[in-house]
Structures are given as C-alpha cells and as structure tokens.
Image (tube, rainbow, N blue to C red; front, side):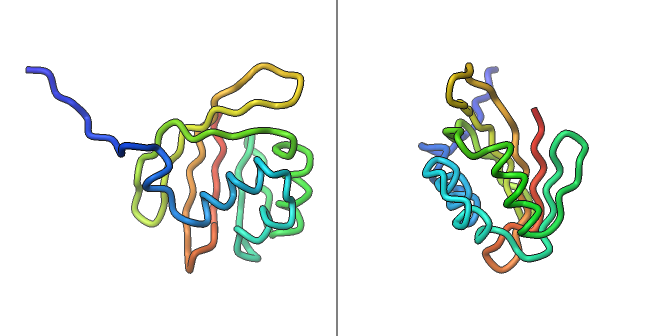
Length: 116
C-alpha cells in the first residue's frame, strides 16, 4: 500500500507571520525589517556559529543573506516553530537549498538554525 503525505496546498500557507516577514525582508533587501522579525535576545546558528541579539543578526544578515532571493519549497510544523526548506539564489551565483528551523515567542523569532 502506498502512503501519501499530506502537505499544505502552498508551502507558504502554514508559515508563521514572523518567518514569512523574515523571508519577505530578505527578498526586498530590507535589513531593518529583517531585524524586526527577531526578539532582542534571539539566536541564529549558522555554520556552527552562534549569532545573538538583533544587532549581531543585522550584521550577519548583511554579510550572508542580503542580496539573495528566497522561495519556500516545503514547510514542516514543529512545536513552537516550523522547519522550512528554502531555495535561495544569490546575485551572480547558482541556486542553493537550505533548511531553516525557527522557534517563536510572542510573534517574534527567538531561534533560527540554518542547515545547508
């Protein structure tokens, strides 16, 4: 018997507002809007580095994600969060895939893990 997984009609249907705003701010190149998605003490894990607080997150985003275009391909709900498969494209580079795991509190991102 073949089992079918049920997925949302669109990957973006089930994305919490803070994660959606994060993706949109990257696509617009809006660093201030990106920082506003996070709590003041939020943590991002990227390539085994821990980035803590909105000022550090802004600096990280300026180096790592600004200038990219993100498209959500798949969303997997988690307790207090979501895991997203993203297809990204950087200007002048070939596309890449990345998994993001987000945790939220009071409509802000408190934790993000980027896993290539």
